[in-house]
Length: 190
Image (cartoon, rainbow, N blue to C red; front, side, top):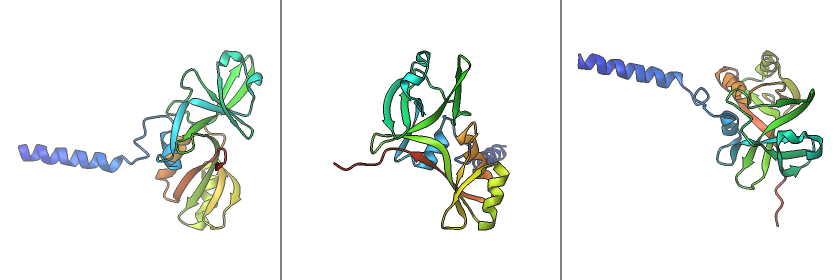
């Protein structure tokens, strides 16, 4: 009896381990996109958003505090978390019938700068002939092919969650790699 129970428990544990990959086990907003960017360098910042709009062009009721500016991006601190597990992607906030677009932000722990998740990614497939098939299958837009014929830069917008996309691509037999391309200030040596 004990050995049957023990073997049943082992079988259940083994089945659980087989069915849960790293991508399936994400719990936090922007967790998978942060992992693909590299958790040793980047950290999700759930109370930070990026916009192409200056502070004076946003409603004061959003209660955003400007933290940094680089290029055309304004990085803001939000009073509460705007992203959930299923919404780590471009956000559209409506206020007085006007739409305001915001993007998620990661922190570069080495430089202290904010990196904007712009919706562009590097995609690599196992076989070059599958690259366009994957792009078409998921409705991505080709930005440019890279020198290796199995790689391209793609635009995944519009999308609700980068994490859900990464989870789906992790299960796709044709996809070898998906990694975010971010906008962040250049490192300037002193």
